[in-house]
Length: 163
Image (cartoon, rainbow, N blue to C red):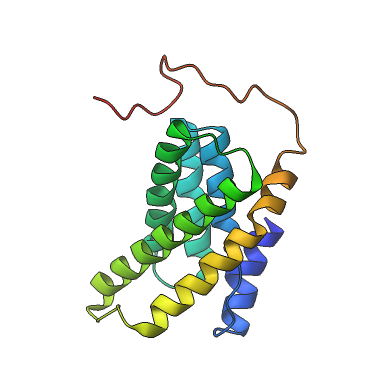
């Protein structure tokens, strides 16, 4: 909670031009890789909502970005083994880009402005790169808690992509 508050409220409001790793997205990636079920999706939504509340701007863009990133990471994590640092970094990089572009799309709809330009894209790439660099550390720190079985059965605990 301290890291989320520090990232969302303190750093981004005091130094708006500063690009920091997206700690919230890293927690969403950890939820998606380790959980992959509906409670994890709800957790991703509430992490994004917490980010929206802490930023004090619009309510919803971060929550939507976290949900879309969660679904993308779960989809890839079901197909590929992603328990190692490089794979987690690649997922964090992709998830961060997904979250940022979802956020920008919703912000563009809310404010009726043009969102695509070099500045937002370059900032998103730098943020995604920093997030990918910190992802193995955050993934390791979140694994220090109580151990649970990481293998889920297909009988309803995981999200089903085939209808």
